[in-house]
Image 1 (tube, chains in turn red, green):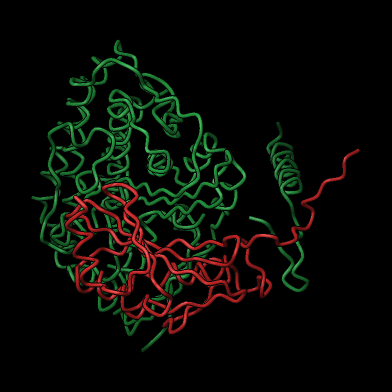
Image 2 (tube, one colour; image 1 turned 30 degrees about the horizontal axis):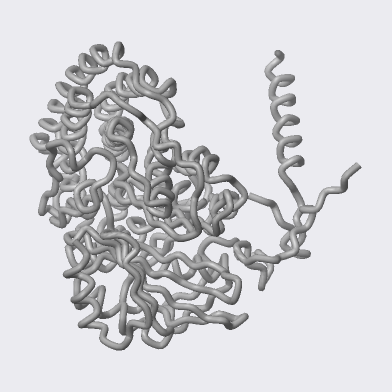
Length: 153
Length: 393
């Protein structure tokens, strides 16, 4: 169960934990400052042997956030590390130099949401075509969509 | 002599578009690039416009083979938000459908693997044995694939008990054939020569890339969401995680064949133990919050993240298919091998491109949309008409 895991994570991460929310016995969310993301990922992935599952980015009402999901399979728990920014040009540290499995998803988040990842080993487009217009991010909100507004008769 | 052999993005031997660039020195692969994105369908964006109840139909269409793994992972994410208990009978039904899917998906892979090796007898046999499994799926759910059984809080339809004897009889027959296939894989010297020591993925590399499913279980890491984060009825029945220490393509083949036998065992137990009762928790409202659901698809863990703001639609829905994590491992497994073996190594993760990516047509020079949905339908109808005329009907 997650109590033992949560106390170990708290102890190892120390004051990097801004907020820790136990959603259910098998789901834990940790908020960290963007500057502590790489160190946090190092502790969970290399130190505690967590499996990197995936990341999910989104645009929120006041900025952007990225959740990196780490699976602790033997403890039956998924621990998600959240970083937030209020910047209109979001940028976070890349964890791909540490975790090869994060390379694709960081490139994808850049394509679809326009989130940049500092230090990514290969910051090329992944999903979008090479001739897709620059600065158009399909998953961002408030993007004017051509032909989206239909005329009522 | 160094050269580049491009496979794809559109290639007569590929069922789906994807680009692999093999940098070769003579016959040895010295580097590989993968380019994806040729099949992106924007499903995560579409999902934001669907209600929580409609999304399972959408995500069921992410993959044409493991069509039930995505809905299961998605509804678990929604159930995680709402913290709802799924009725036991519904959990059993989910397990049965998921295992039937694993069975036919693994048989499909065994056939394709045979084909890639030039061993077309295996291809013919495996696909022949897959048919009765699809028949069972049709008997139980009404469809060979895309079963539309899963909904948040339970399942849509009950299973008809009168059909169980036929299903069990068919499973007996399939099991016998699977045992024969297992024997063929473990005994055949030709398969050993082609598969053993080929495409090695070490445990450390598997962890670095976050490899999943049979790919990681063949590298000696017994990771399986069905046991590690039990869902459906997997914690109520007796079954084993199959894992071998081989780390090569042979290991991946063995894991899939043995796992299929486990699937038969799981389905049998479920059909025998399934209790009577409700099949739906009648989930009415999804509160604001976030949830994670994952399920063990035939190719590995399918991961869904859903965020709700309290309305009837998700504000964010992330879907990650197992191939997304498994495909990049080709940098470890293909480099250093002969170009002849590249096909079976790439196939050994059982890649599913459509799942990995989820079209509008834009004009590259102006950045404007050139074709919309209506236009694409019109083009498709025109083509059908033209073909009909040419064929004289």
